[in-house]
Image (cartoon, rainbow, N blue to C red; front, side, top):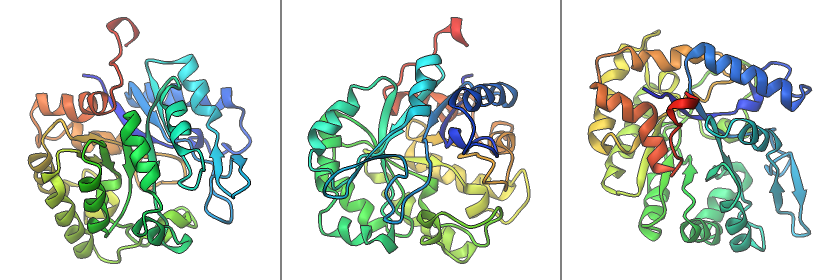
Length: 310
């Protein structure tokens, strides 16, 4: 069975990631994946944000939009095309969104886009006022799936699903808010402005996400569930009934596993994020094959590895 991790900020795997060379960081990632038992990773390369919540690495345009750059991801795909793909970020204010989306679609290894509208940067209001419409329409037109995280805002997500029915949307982090307190230091603003204080409230948010499974263009990334939805230590047995509800609602072809593991998120080891479900009896073997690999491959149109490379 192939194990595909649908989200890792892989460039941040080492504590020295800010000064490591691309080759050093990539070699460490491959060795760690082999040790954990992860065959392939969808990279979301992140280097933080500037004061205006724009990607820290990229070319700024005259209107303030930033065209982000992803050198680590490009190198990973170049060296290991069967093991890596990656997510791109397009600024919703880019004046040439349609052309940029077409160019990104043609890049080797890019399998999707991502938006995380940040409340304190005015991006929720921007979303409500149609400020993301050109980007969403362009993604639908060129066939790029859109990952998004809108915790506690199912109405916003539902509006996207209705308006762009041919756009494959993947909701990140089980669609719920962050659980305080968080270990490991200050939170990035994208998370600090999306706290949901209690376990009961976060589980209620999950109920609202499950209700959106009626939309066939929505898939769910099962990620951060131990932190957000469990009241227990590893192996988080209280999560299994919740996971079963999600799987039954969405079906095995629309739920994907992700660890989102980096050294900046010490709540679980990479192996723990995998094995609490891989070793459980909550799924059939066929369901495990889809959840841990086949669903991500199909949803993102990313061909599976050949037997000779696995």
